[in-house]
Amino acid sequence: MRETDLYPPIKAFLEEAGYEVKGEIGPADVMGVKEGEDPVIVELKTGFSLALFHQGIARLSVSDLVYVAVPRKTGRVFAGALAENVKLARRLGLGLLTVRVETGLVEVHCDPGPYAPRKNARRRAAMLSEFARRRGDPSAGGTQGMRMTAYRQDALACVQHLAQAGACKGAVVKEATGVARATTIMRDNHYGWFVKVETGFYDLSAAGRAVASG
Image (tube, rainbow, N blue to C red):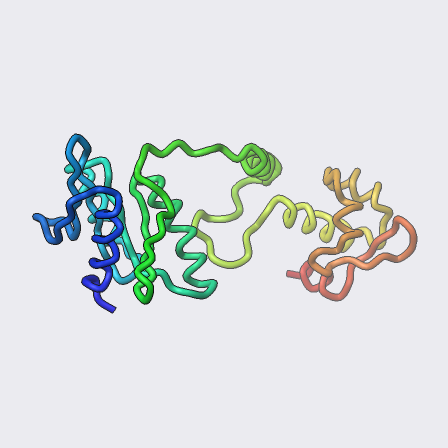
């Protein structure tokens, strides 16, 4: 696969839209011109890369109609990469095309234009809630592996109380630790640290005792 393999389908696609198309005009891989309109510029690469988007951004100094284009591949890995790179292209104000080289089919996944993101109110609320419930700042930004969430902090508070007091009723753990959801945490037993002794009463499992002992 070479970048030049993408050129004939892209050229035909733009010509069908009424553009006169030529390759390698200045730094641009492909340029299409139609009277009375901004020129269309397309940057070609054999796969997604930071360099591809750098080139696309640079061409925005020439025209607002800039696309990046890559070959269309199969499989979930490419599908995931395509979805993420479409988001990136939209943020940058670029269009994104894929080319099925074997058939010459060009697909438009997004057109160039100003980026106007829609806010996710539920995600925002969840993050603000997690921020408010987190005790202190136990996780360094960029941490790989187990994250110290507010839920985990609450579960650890329950573990420490049971380690000192022995089997307790959920309401007692709640009162002693200040963890409002203590009973739910011990009942759901997400980490495997708790065992139900009888209705409403919980104690530590072997795993919970190991956590309590450090």
